Length: 375
Image 1 (cartoon, rainbow, N blue to C red):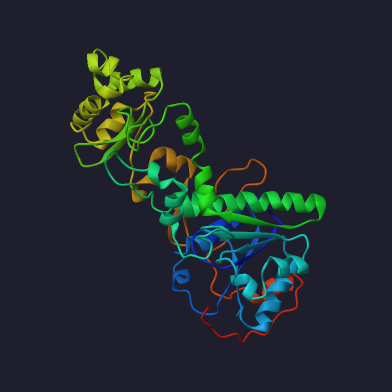
Image 2: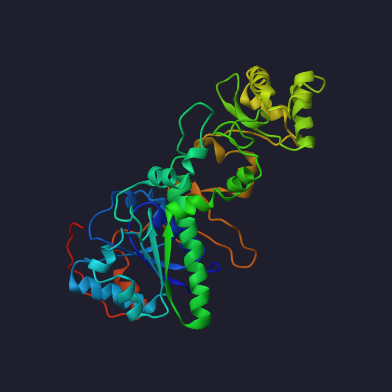
């Protein structure tokens, strides 16, 4: 099932972006085997470990000789390995790129870090907020005159990290299948989040981008913004083009308003125009505005909370969210016409599949008495 059916992935379990990459590959049909420390994982019992869905688990002590040899056995049968640790950790375990590529020269060795494998920060600790701060991406987020606002951990961990790792390992698999040569993929969140700013750099070079919160796409423009409604909700407006802006003004009753019609292109008018729009949106509830804009091409949408989004008619019809294993969660994406992606199963219990994985992959199985260790 899925376009990656038959692709075998060994994921050395970490947190955040590594597991998210594993989830993406599993949703697309890859056989993703998580290698994790022996021990209980309480979140699995309720199905709430969404990032573990559709994957299998083997529990191994990577600090033991037997655990190391077991992982190398899996590596010989796999096409991809995901390493989520800081530079040097897998080398010390005897599972670094040199060790694994010696065991399987066709292997794509995907490394997921914040700072990358080299550079002054490579050995430092960090989190999403730090990586996107150093890349410059965080400086773009927030209102004028205010501090940068982290977009939770979407921009570094997941957008700049896991998604680029997924693209990188899949490109590596294509190369390995055509040449027989594996390689190391260095996916650093600082690099990926910088690449996500490519269009902003283009706009700056064209003289179209100024300080944070003063631009078309960062809440500077009144026609690309969010507004509070009478019931305390929020609505979004993205009416950049002429025809959409005209629709917006028509619904707001501003089709003949001098400032609204002629102030759009004058940045000096934006604060006053933003206040005008805000005052009008504050007169109705979010639901009333959704009804007013129904069927109108004004680039408008209500801002739903996560627990509301699944019930929105468009989202519901597309099945963008699904209920699986007792937990509402995003459905796999993107969609394929011939090889549909899907959630392959519930989050596994730690070590649940150790016997079947080694049997199915044709790898000599280790003993099953490994105890939890600290790493």
